[in-house]
Image (tube, rainbow, N blue to C red; front, top):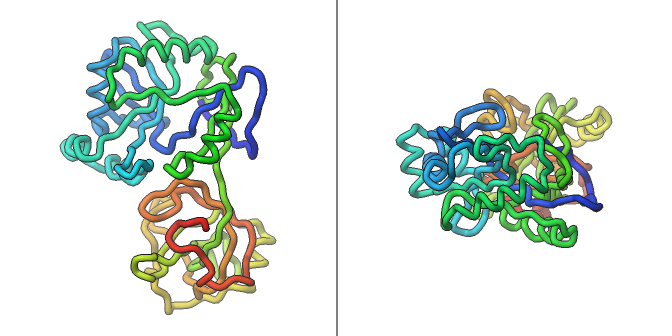
Length: 315
């Protein structure tokens, strides 16, 4: 199942709330163990510590829905570790499982003992899931995701958990069955507004289609790539064109490594990095960049690059 975005926390009878974990979505089954991504990619060899726990700690005939995450030693979610695992060989993944162990945060149970539970209400599935996860001796790579029916608790999660990399709150109707492909769940993602320096554009300086954003690295003092905006509206592009000047005297290379869903290197036009813009990123980070495209809000010609927070700080 999938989720549609909302801009405030829905409340009402039968609603259940869960943290929105920042990781790899995973369907996991036992007897035999099989772990697949949302798009059907096999994940078992990439996360052998989780596959081993599924085989060792759960009975056969189980089908789980959850999110693979990596908790770094500092207590934050480390999406970069998942990317490293994603490109590893089976042998490398086994070694990384010892040095950077990952967890499967389980939030739904679709089958148990060979019984199909997808047609049952979420509240019923959750009760069975809690009984099943009670069989798992902790500490384990398998962990039960949090859930509450209290909107005040959900609001507290939304306020406090971005500090550790949790993206927001999921909202689900406890009466609903599990319907794959349907966006019946809702997600309230934590977004903040902050400033960034425009270092490049997708397209041309006089007709930008998107902005490549920079932040100054506090350790080196150098301007580095921090993110990319989504596609600009025509009126936004027209407004920005008057502030952007193409240049070859720039600290960034002519092309950037593939990121933000691009299938190859990102071609762009470098511009004089003196324009500040206000953007709305979410809390997901990887390799010192905002992992998702950010929403452009407005130009801030009243600010100087020195006014912009460093690294990925929002204040």
